[in-house]
Length: 176
Image 1 (tube, rainbow, N blue to C red):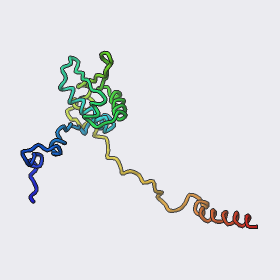
Image 2 (tube, one colour):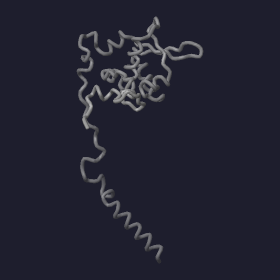
Image 3 (tube, one colour):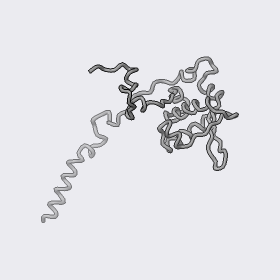
Image 4 (cartoon, rainbow, N blue to C red):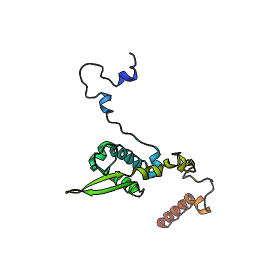
């Protein structure tokens, strides 16, 4: 059995349509801009901002606003309602993300201020990464295990022995 080439892998192997075709499952990828993690402080915020940038380019609204429901955000990004709320709270603090209620019933319309986003990315300085040049690599997660093997006190060292002594003492008192 030969391994199919990558282009063949995504195409149906027969003329009959298959519902379980991998190509069908991977039909709606979304762009994720890693640099947005730096300015939003979270992956969820960066993911939501990446998708918002996509829709901002495709809106017909004069102000550049677009509408997305919670269900639409979840369908497109996989973010739950609570993840969306946390991401939106962080994004509102950035200055380039704005939300406005419109219509009856009210719906939330989103807008990205491209100039403020570019400024946050450092694009006006000619080097997009210049704003983040001083951020150093984080260290590995610190272990919860104590660095030394010595207990904090002598009592902690002999805790099991003390417990056994108490049990013996209580047992002998009851046996009298």
